[in-house]
Image (cartoon, rainbow, N blue to C red; front, side, top):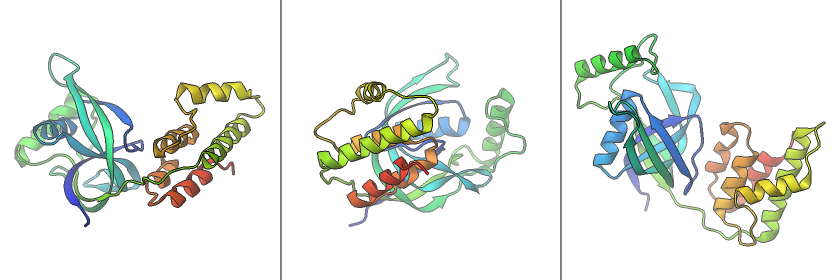
Length: 236
């Protein structure tokens, strides 16, 4: 049976995979509200890659697929409480069925890095009602995890493709094989028992742009996943 839920959505310039850790510094009022609401609830929100071709009330819109982030730690960065540091870990993947727009439209000339920007948002929030949500929400459909086994042979083939890509992109500079092996050791990717998490981590090492990772996240089965990783690792 399909499981759906309403999630706060945090569009970011990155792709979060299940079980990956993601630290975030929170300073925008709308995302401080998001974190506060999460801490009063189940501590979960959705992380989606920003959709550069769309917007919601003027704000960055999310891609249709994302990953639930579970807050594992939350602390004030400053004594005034204007900045928060949170630590999160990826949970289930999801697909957005319906966007729930935020209560506020993006103000003209809004700068989230300035006190003036924060003041503008706070004043608009008071006018619209402080119970209203300043952040995007969405009705999402949870996606079952890919739990198929991955053979060592297929894993090694992907590693070889990754190495070839790095070597080719570095030309005319020469990349020594031992240097690439050191990178794999650094990220704990030397294994004889590969899992989906290894595939995700290797993909992150092979991507130059977060958009390169979106097809990996959206893969529905092991064959589609492996094919998308091969495309990512193929030098064009």
